[in-house]
Structures are given as structure tokens and as C-alpha cells.
Amino acid sequence: MRSEMLNSILSDLNGSTADIEASAVLSTDGLMMAALLPAGMDEDRVGAMSAALLSLGDRTSEELNRGALEQVLIKGDHGYILMTHAGHDAVVTILAKKNARLGLIFLDVKRAAENIAKII
Image (cartoon, rainbow, N blue to C red; front, side, top):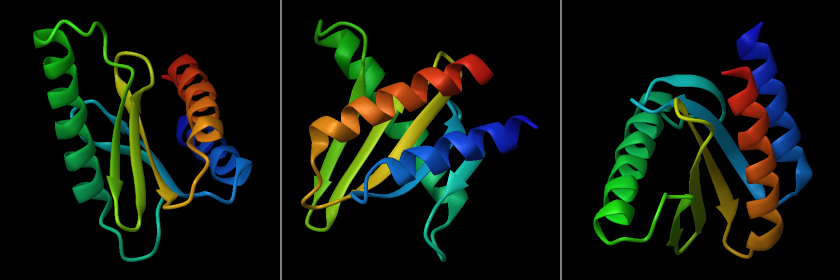
């Protein structure tokens, strides 16, 4: 039941804009809880990398006195990767197109993360 609810939130998130290509919810230690990823993308690898980057972001934000981490944003030639906490125990990761309107995506991801935190 919980995985169905998480998949529903991810489906709504992906449907909120054509700019979001994929999304996933994982535990802070990298275990996949729910995912809507492209075929051929390794869920375990996505989970491990997301957890590692978010953990490093948390530590960096603290060490450099920037306060609590809100998100990690990576920009590549082919688009964006955005990671944010969903409560204390989960992470939301999305893949977005290179011409994505990030302001709208930030709002949609924040809303999805809040809903996920209520479930977890």
C-alpha cells in the first residue's frame, strides 16, 4: 500500500510538467522505495548516488555554515538532477530536461516531498 501511494505521488509529479523525465523516492541510505525511471536505468545505482550526494551536501552545508540543506542541484549537458529530503528518512530525486523551468519544478518537488514525508 505504501509503495502504491509513493508511486502515485511520483506519477503526479512527473505529470505536473513535461520537463520532468523521471523521479524516485529512496531511503537516506540509498534503498529504492519507489521509482519511475527510464528503461535501462539501474535503480540501485540511482539510489546509491543520490544518497551519497545528499549526504555530502548535508555535511558541506553544515561545515560551511549555510544552515540545513534544502536541495542538491546538478546541471549536465543533457539536463538537471535535483535531490531533496522528504522528511528525515527519505530522498526525492528527479531528472529534468535541459531547458526545464526550474522554478516550477522546485515548487512541485517541494510539494511532493512534503506528501512523501507524511507517508513515510
